[in-house]
Image 1 (cartoon, rainbow, N blue to C red):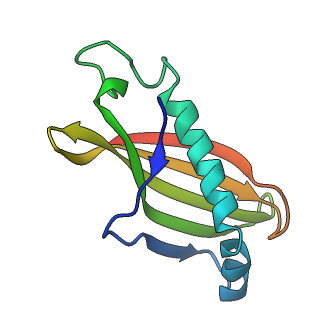
Image 2: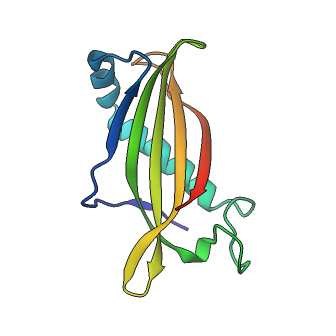
Length: 132
């Protein structure tokens, strides 16, 4: 199944934790398109994994057949990390389901990225799901 980021009227909530400075946030935010590519890749892997997102099993959650293929970013949290030193970025995405001619929130996925400095490569620390 393919997945695409869509624009909505909902603006993501941006949160800062544990001493991240505005300058550090700005440097990380300059890499927003790279962050989104990592998030999209992780969402795609999740929804196409038969052990995490079920294909045909009725009554099981999440069910891939219900997904519309669209998602949007709900919130982003930036955390200055001490052990190991670096920055943790937590991106909350909401995947929608098909409801006739419209869509509604169906599955929440939270992708956690880590980067040692504003210039290093992003590492994926994990993905968590929730029913929304």
